[in-house]
Image 1: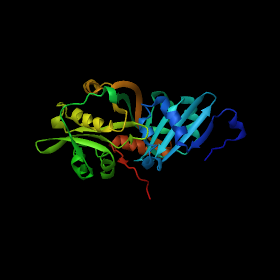
Image 2: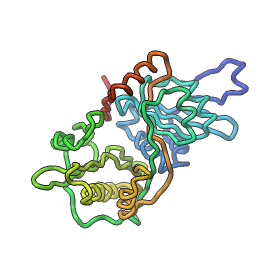
Image 3: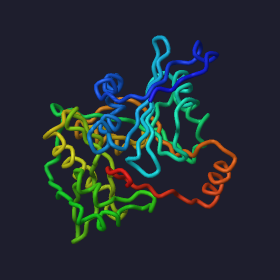
Image 4: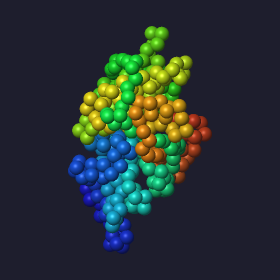
Length: 293
């Protein structure tokens, strides 16, 4: 689908079109490969079926937007020039509610279209196979049957694991006193393009500060390096102990990004957002790799 503009806008607005060629999409994503790791995973068949890609080009500048139903609410990732991105977001159908990954310079454009319920500045770290330094202690590979035990570690009902997510992804855990106390894993993996995004690192409060999360993360990364050359993760920049722990595994700082939860700007949307903030209602996120049918 190619979006058309009126004659009065063609001279000033960038050309916007929907992308359908993986190699063309990848040519944009490779410009900031680490930041775009989750987007690159959406080029794989399961995610491709539930994703839409749009690009705007204006002179030497470009902006790209991924909109995917791989999560509920939808997932959005933006890339490129901020002014061009603003025109792009003006020109494409955006979901009413979305989990958003953007670059810090994109926030002005994002907030013209979404009321943000929350946002968080994150540090993106990256490890490559050659510099990875695994921990000696081993973790146990987790399967879909262990999803209930894993969900007991989730402190918020808004972020939980699902059987198909664990079944298709790479998850490891550690046990202490006969119970699962730490988990790490991911389903955002691109063996085709050699990159994966480590997420979902959780530890039971009673077992924190014992290095158990690092053991799980180390096992996941070691597994991923069987078919990927790079693994990325996010960490809060001010969480220096965690940054240090990942650095010990061979991760290095790469860039800063913003994660946010947004609802489309509207009178009704603003009321709902304010109510959620007032009563601390959290949306429930479901990660999925199959389209709704």
